[in-house]
Image (tube, rainbow, N blue to C red; front, side, top):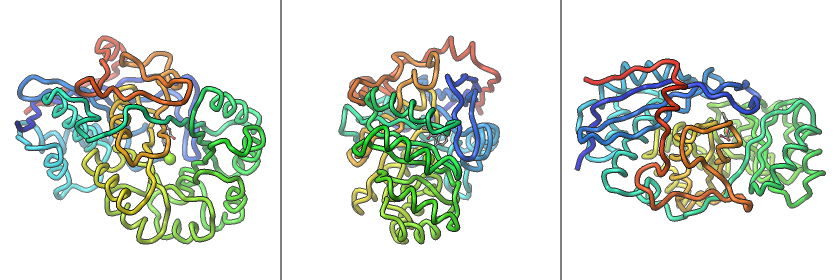
Length: 375
Ligand code: OSB
Ligand code: MG
């Protein structure tokens, strides 16, 4: 029962965020989202999402480079080729083909959805996920002043979120986190994410953040750095969590070898898809490294893949899997993603494939450009 993709449709849609999302390296107001519809030789059709952003401020990839990579390099490698498994497709996309992980992941993860549909199983079951409910965290962007951030963080805690991530940068950090800690109390599950905003010469500031009993400090230093993170981790009590720096299984091994961090935020798109995500997950089980599933302001399509992955047993920390209504007036899937009052998202383990219905008419309405590729 091999997988053979016959047609790839690319659609760029634009979804306005309810409120702008600012991180240290940039701001998003309208999310330009690349959706893919993959159709296999038996007529099964699935939707997947490429999570690359508009600008290369998170990783070198953007929605436009991903479009090009899929059209010119990825599609020709996979179209009408039988792959015994999604992992085999992954390996074909690695051969003499550097980078472009998010573009590759959109196809690779879609091939897992095709496999799930064909077996009549949910993605979660196919990936050997074990949990039907996952703890949910929120990622709160950089705000104008501490008071605004405190109000948003308090609201999030009251809504039930199990992890509250505050985006920080130099100047919007120590005072902001202090205010949130003071208001939410010592027991509140708070962390920060710097998206590379610091250097080793900011050690004093980072040591101040170290005093707030944070669950972790995510990616303080450069996006492609491991060695300096190792130096920094030796100076901090708080675990460092790596996001941008972990682009493959090997980088995860390097992190562990060097002591560059103690927690990994696994975003399947960043590592080229589920094959690598599973390998990193299993490595972390063996090495006693905690993991959680990050987010990229996905639509409900991309989110369904993250939720399936996060149902694996070692995703022990709450994921950035906020409900649809946190981001959008209306999502493009039904049911929309929701969270209960105790901060849990339900994994649709009994539904085949990605577990939500994609609103194709709405995608048509939102589409700015599209292209169908077949051989
Ligand atoms: O660093 O985790 C990040 C969004 C865009 C780019 C990078 C990051 C993020 C988030 C959002 O933190 C998480 C979410 O989807 O809610
Ligand atoms: Mg991050």
